[in-house]
Length: 557
RNA sequence: GGGCACGUAGCUCAGUCCGGAGAGAGCGUUUGGCUUCUAACCAAACGGUCGUGGGUUCGAAUCCCACCGUGCCCGCCA
Image 1 (spheres, rainbow, N blue to C red):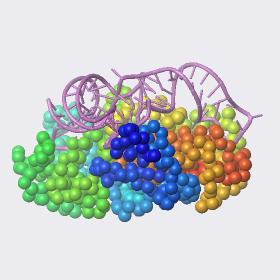
Image 2: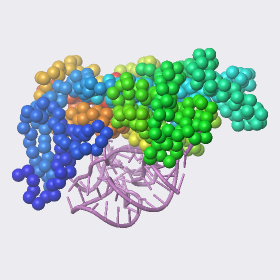
Image 3: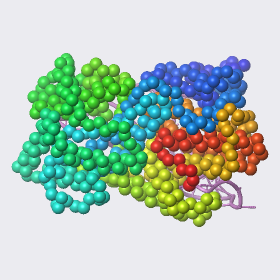
């Protein structure tokens, strides 16, 4: 009897049965759109071996077979465990894309950390991923920046906070903005004329003007990259806005927009009257210059031409702009289903917003320095009571401090839903206790510790027999290992890397329970072999999961 | 005023898309556990009007409506 005669058993109830108890099933939905979920069996074991079934109240529970567990052990023994089959689909993930006006600060740090994790997840889920940083090197802010750099004398500026190009140059940017705020009308007008000239030069594709602006853009970008590389976050390509002004594609977009029925010419400016939007979208100023969105349209058509999908990580303040962009792209005949935006809420300070212009931001470099420093202190304070006799060297301490310090920052950010507001507080961001990166990293170090002690780790391919692993803790760990591929798929489908973070936490809990209850090295031969294989599978799984989050997996701590 | 987010334990958050088993973690508080593979660990206790009010449903933190609170946006800036 599968169902209690009178028990409520809706379709949803059946779905629950599939999803919660049976690790080999996954909920598969068509990408992005809510379609009725169906159960799908994943491994060959689950298709070919009968399962046991039990009834608990109104629920029917399916239990995996032993062969399924054997397969999990074998699969998780492979280095690439959790990597899904190629989807034969390319996707460009654009993230960070911060204006090159100053050092990367914590308010924006959510973007590269989330973006990098999304790219990692998509890559692991079988997509052919490219990581892009879209460089705004053409707008009014950059013209202003170039003007300020050429106008003000270094002697009038305060010492830079660090000796690196981004910290050096941001002083000119701040000075320029401050000047415009305080200047008399005449002074402002004169300055605006010069800024306007730069803007016009860029618009005309003038090489000399491009070079003038590039004087600040290039070194600024180098400096900012240095910060991001510490995370570490890197890019396949820095795509410049000016590229689309130079190759004529933006001009072509303007012409096509002008030809649409939604185009209106009002107050000397070309605008788009988009359905569903109250405000018209200006795409050509009255002085004939383009706007950010105009150039971004060309940028996105370029993405569509070169990739199957495009994902953009954006601050929530760009929500409206992103929606209008999508609408305009649609108007131009693009398939906007290819485009996904992931919006995140800015990180604020207890006292308010961070601003590059006003100089009120906490620099990412400072956060990372502080985090590594706190991690170092933590390690040193633990050296006394350390049981393991592996004599950490000074280099080890430094390595662990870096792995833990950077990991803690990334985990704190990537583990939360992007839409939730975050207020930055040092102590909270750099808490090394449970539900943090070190908690998970520690599990990896423990697996390495055990495997190092074992003179030889049994080969995993096919010889493992999971039936020796019958304690609740062993089973629970095996279950959570088996779930990893489904977690990868779900994180990729939802563009939600925080589900991987949630998974790592749960994984660590299961492993630690196993660690407490099940001695490995001192166990009887058969049990010892099986547990060693289990630990090896756990190490691979947690290392790969941390890798998706961009967090190092230390071999010792 | 309009649009988009967010509101779950004292605090920080999962769970919400796709409704189902007395709503889960961590921090903090209280208590217990290192001669035993690393105690950045584990076990236990305490802690909840899931913002409020309606509705749909056998069943709602989850779906719908209204309201309240908070954030963001509504520029020929990005």
